[in-house]
Length: 227
Image (cartoon, rainbow, N blue to C red; front, side):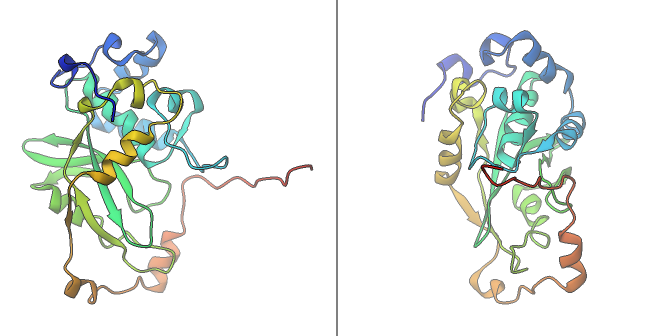
C-alpha cells in the first residue's frame, strides 16, 4: 500500500494541501464539523448501487458522483473528521455469506460511536456510548443478516488509521481506493461469537424480514441495452 509523507502519519488536523482537494471540495468537509453533521450529510446523499460494476470510490469521486455505499461514505466521514482534528479511523465488520460493512469511528468522553452509510434501516449510526469496539460491533449482530435471514456478522477489525495511507489513493484518487479495501481485509480481526454460539443464533422472524426489506433509496431500473 502506498504510504503518505512521514509528516502526515501523525498529523492531527488535515489541511487542504494535505488532502490535495480543491477549495470547493474542501469546503464541503469544512462544513461537516461534527459526527452528527457528517451522518446527516451521508444519509441525504444518494445510494451507490454499483450499476456499472463494483466500486471503491475516493472522496473526490464520491463528491463528484453525489452517491456512495458504505466504505465510500466512510472515506468522506474519515476525511471530515481529520479536517476537524479527529483521527480518520475505519472499522471493518466481517460477515459470512454476506457483504462486509465499513464504518468511520469517533470517540466522545472515552466512548466509541460510528458514522455509517447504508441504504437499509439496520446498520446505521451508533451513538458514542460503547466502552469498547467489541461492544460497538456487537450492537450490529442482531440486525446484520444475509439474504437467507441468517445472522451473518462474525468479526470486527482493529481500527485502521487512514493517516497511514496516501491521500492520493483514498482522497483524490481517480482509479478507486481498492488498496484501502484490501488493507482492511488484511488487518487483524477479532471473533465476535464462538463456534458454539454460532449454533445458538436464530434466523430472523417474519416481521424482522419484512422490516429488513425497507430501504431509503430505491434501486433504479436498468433498461436493457439497445432499447
